[in-house]
Length: 142
Image (cartoon, rainbow, N blue to C red):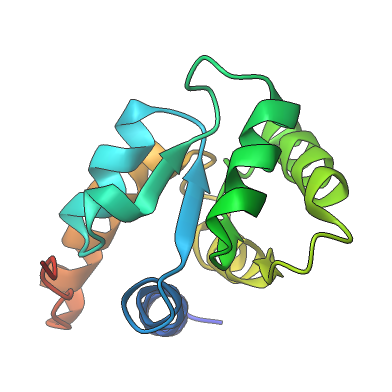
């Protein structure tokens, strides 16, 4: 897959993520504040982005998500720690009846492999490729 094809696949994954958030009321789980900022820069409303490391245990986070009854997209970093965190969250949310998406994370990982391992670098990477390939990024929806 060429770099341009990877970027187009990323845009497709981003469109899928935006659909879950904007049309289905979904929440995106990220590891930290810098991840939230990066996703906001590429068109996601910050209020839809939930910090995993926000001072609560994974159990408390999962219970809070289950109470909110909204679809969840897990978008942890593409390193070993992020993979483990994703698996822990899936286990905590399993059986809750909530739609839990990890496929978008996998799709994005394929597109940034070799360039990024963290979500916080996504905005800069996407903006650079958007300019290079003249493919616009979505703007933040309010």
